[in-house]
Length: 198
Image (spheres, rainbow, N blue to C red):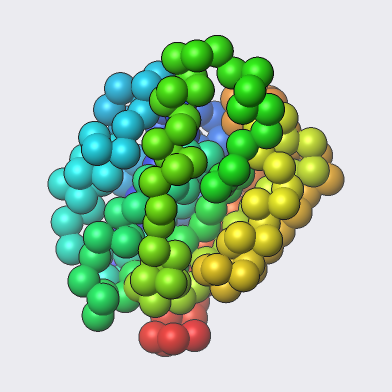
């Protein structure tokens, strides 16, 4: 059975309306869905989130898919980076993912210190692309945190198919996002073509 792991973002939870909707729709489509509550979500750390994900996922394969939101995308990237080079996963959908942040200087000191390791610790994107040759990255033009310029990183470094929505903010509860059909369609699209290297 094809399995999808949904990884929420900073300060988020698997109970957010959009993520719950996505999980429910995927289950209706025959997917097994795992949506863990990530540890210490208000102060996310690479050294806790990535090992947590390793424990939850175990050894993924071509029937394993991921959806990340915001910092959840980074957690997935950093997890995929740890996998053996010969591993192949089915694919990833990155929602409002970031490698740079808007207005970091305006963050309070605590949030800035929490964000900096995620911004400054390198990721071997070439290895990630090898492990996950199929991916889709979704952004909005009015996201208050994620500059749409992040799309270029995903397109050039990961070979992601890019979807840019006119509106939707950070695609979370605060921006009143209850559903995200483009994410659902993206999972269906990449899961229907699981030939390695495609």
